[in-house]
Image 1 (spheres, rainbow, N blue to C red):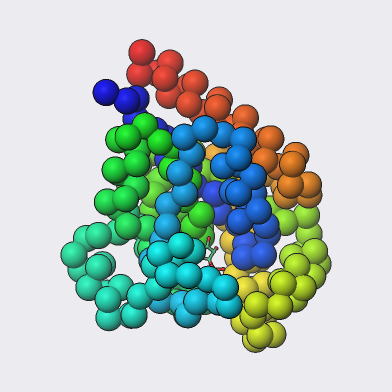
Image 2 (cartoon, rainbow, N blue to C red):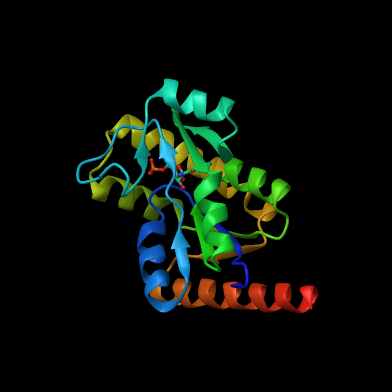
Length: 194
Ligand code: 5GP
């Protein structure tokens, strides 16, 4: 039987460069799976259902909550986001490490339920740089950008609740640091289970 994988949560304010980091990390690490979330947010241009997210209605999301289908879920800037439990557990059992890109409330729920989870908080180099990136990517209107920046300040204030804080000042450096944190975490878990 394959050795079980580990659960890794990376939280970061929106616009911090998380998707670039995960794509690079998947190129440098073997057996790392990305968990696809469900959300009630509308797809952005270029996003596809079942690829970027499972885009569902509020009614569907609420019935998934009632059916206990989520490992965690949270409301963020007016929309629900949640991690379906089934796909995560299936991948962990198959020996894959599973990477969750979720916001801080969800990260805390996962840590409570699965204390062996590695929690990493990814910080923007500065709030000015974060605003520049959010405006530059042109995906959200100014009202949404201001709400996301407000949310970012609240999220950064919670970084001490994470196991590690990594500053995304340079993608390759941040990827190398996260890669090493995952390897060290796996070594520790293996030793403590031996
Ligand atoms: P976005 O709308 O920019 O795709 O995501 C907004 C925020 O929701 C990001 O911080 C992202 O990490 C978070 N998020 C995405 N999926 C989930 C999820 O399944 N659960 C939780 N709690 N947050 C999520």
